[in-house]
Image (cartoon, rainbow, N blue to C red; front, side, top):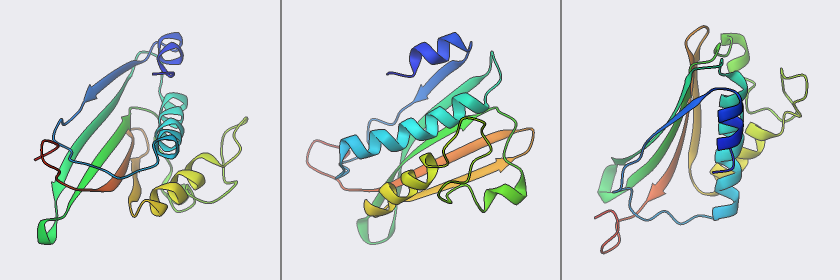
Length: 144
């Protein structure tokens, strides 16, 4: 994972809680890596030294045998002010000195193109959770 040196430099701990039964998700690997990279980069930027960033995955059953594979990235940063939550996916919207405002806007576009969802929940002083949900399918021997 390319983020590991940056995590170590900033004294951050990364924990993984990955569900081996996610099923099969049809995706463009490079594009989804871009999404995860943007989300993880934001979590790293927001996290104070010595804190933990948690990445978890799970499979959620849906109606008619459908399911969703979700990935959550949770940080212990300062959180996003309520009035900013509505603009986090807006192109060129940023609060970072060196930010472009492209990361989450492009992430949303990519996830939507995969028939998925991306949501953010945040409380000031408590951190932020970004959840990415993508359609998941059972395939013999995978996620069954």
